[in-house]
Image (tube, rainbow, N blue to C red; front, side, top):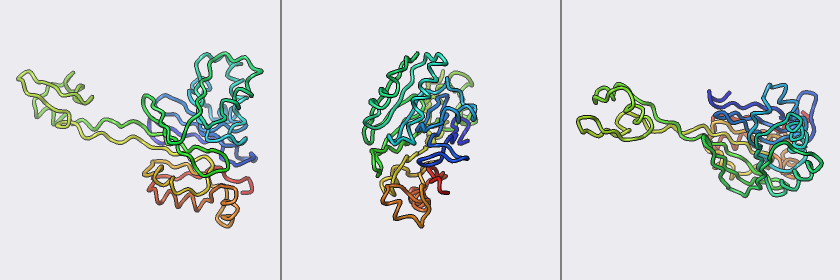
Length: 274
């Protein structure tokens, strides 16, 4: 749980292959009524069932890169949606090559719904009603996008006592001020929102790296994030192997989090050797 309006559910945190206790990469994010899926490793749909996440509410899937452990759950999930007679459109975003991958995996299926596939570019911004998603290329063996999910600004706190002192009657004028509009009182006075409402509060920021070697550009990308979900394939004694395979150690993830001044670091993509 991150807030009343945002929840993060970890469906799989293993790397490369599943273990008896951990599934392959997949993270569900519930944000203001939307359900997003970050990566879709093999077994994701079963994990969604166990976590009691309704399939019907899934709106968007964000794929970090096209290594099998992050995408092999997609064909089964898309097919299951058809067996459930899904009708709502599904949006899938990811790196170049995603369209071919999905078309190949579903060309023998007759889907009951429309799939919109978008291949993204580095530092692209996707704007949605209550949040936006920003992409960032990381340092990996394939094109990998980190994703920053940023909630829209929240209205500042409204102070009814200030409104009363200014003689503003309770009702529609209060609501307009809370929405950021100036109001004119019956006596001709004009009241600005800042006189009774605090400055807007920044929305929550969640960053998911996908796979990456230690990459200093992620410091600024993750700056002051509320949650940083960073891969940690190896422990620090295997730092050389991590560099060779373009992965990170847990200590390197912690260094990024510390430099970026994030509030909470969550490690994922942990090697099955541990």
